[in-house]
Length: 122
Image 1 (cartoon, rainbow, N blue to C red):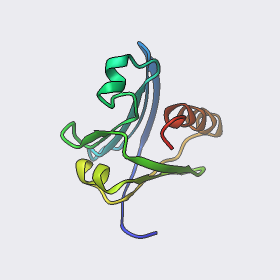
Image 2 (image 1 turned 45 degrees about the vertical axis):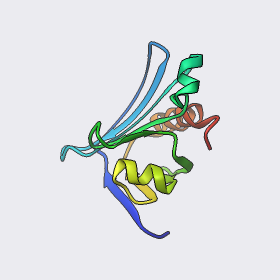
Image 3 (image 1 turned 45 degrees about the horizontal axis):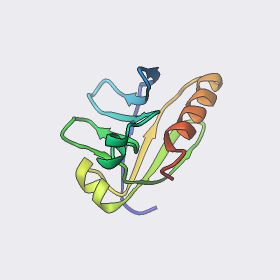
Image 4 (image 1 turned 135 degrees about the horizontal axis):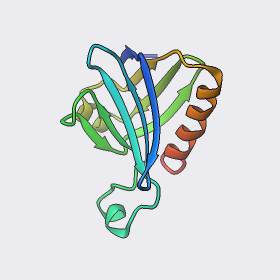
């Protein structure tokens, strides 16, 4: 699979508020992955490229809009394929893997929300 960045998440959060869908993974070591998207972007959002998924890894300094070329979910992990420019911006390798352990009903919701996030990007 080549070079990858990975971590284990103790917590998975899914939230939709004020027209923004957020999916987050975090652990007690301060590592996290935050994915968010405005569900009804304005014309200005589109012009600025902010109508794509916003990806943040471990710190606001390591974030980017877009840059995700694909994703795969399994029962206990998410794998993101990130274009080189996006990977450089978030300080990651081209493949980012997050492992987690959530009940089946939460996994179904996670998969649904990830499809919503990535509906136009990948």
